[in-house]
Image (cartoon, rainbow, N blue to C red; front, side):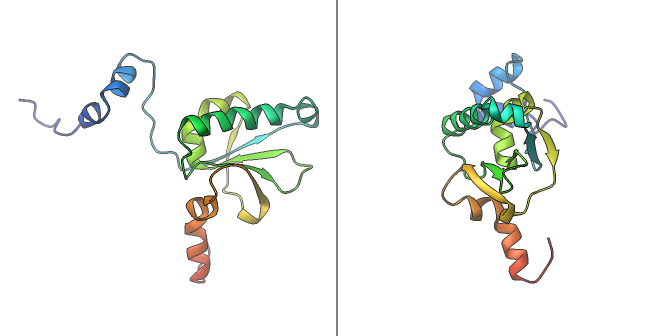
Length: 141
């Protein structure tokens, strides 16, 4: 009997196929992501349509992961900036893609500064609901 290990390996029983992949080094265990990420593209990258490649690749991941409510990709309202934002849920499913485009952790953007590119119809409530609740109570976020 092992003492002190109770519950440590429960995750293996919850998803044995994923556990096997992790143990074989094909997949890493990841902690829940709470940070937002931003990809900034240059004018020349936009002319080369890299923003469309990024959006299409994210959309493919989004659909393959069964439309997670907390995952969304946004563009900045200021079209001259070429900034693309990924919610924490999006980072969970697309961290490799974001890294490939040199994405960096950033502050949570203001919802009024964003345009949804890929996400669910209820994205505002799913991703920004905590902010709206604190604003409704007169508290600052």
